[in-house]
Image (cartoon, rainbow, N blue to C red; front, top):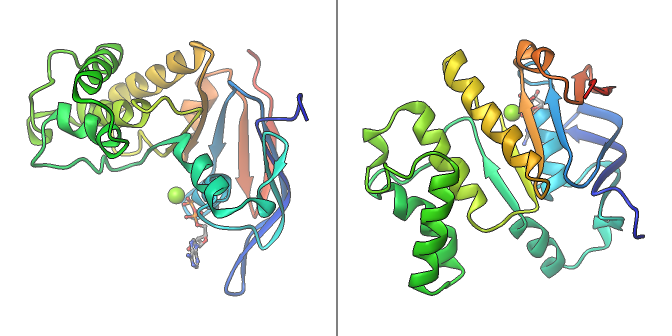
Length: 227
Ligand SMILES: Nc1ncnc2c1ncn2[C@@H]1O[C@H](COP(=O)(O)OP(=O)(O)O)[C@@H](O)[C@H]1O
Ligand SMILES: [Mg+2]
């Protein structure tokens, strides 16, 4: 399917024990799109994100990635998809005994990229993210906003097709939250990266004109945005 949506959840349900968290939900994200997943704590935002990444399976329904039914994927196909995703979480998950450079270089070292290339890539991504001058700092020498930028740089360094940002601004003050959010939007505008951002911050979504899926009582309501 050439024109299949990048991500398509078709009538997915998720039941944990006896608790139906998601009820027959549909979600569609085009390639290079940006969408919010909006909902209060416990609404099921992370559950949806984990079904997309393949970390968990829906109890019912199907997850299609680029038109492919992921329930038919082999282990290596699943692993290949997970490598195309960059993650940013509420807490930064940085290694405290490693510098900004080393934290961002980590995914590339795991891929065994040559040292010289790693240096180039890490330097250029840190510039894009506005941390070019903090390359040798340790996480505890940075502000919360700077640490979250490092997380974002680490998520971006291996050229992901999708960024899954699970409440990336929840622990930041409103101004810093807006900065991180604007950075995500500008990355999306480069046209290559699809971004899915979970948040419980209704006003953040309201101020933008971007599409949002609102999760309430297990159902997903789509708001198209106006841009
Ligand atoms: N592994 C799990 N086992 C049982 N219940 C879970 C599990 N993961 C999440 N839940 C429950 O599912 C609901 C939705 O969780 P989650 O998707 O993490 O919500 P959100 O990210 O919107 O805060 C919550 O009630 C949570 O307690
Ligand atoms: Mg969550």
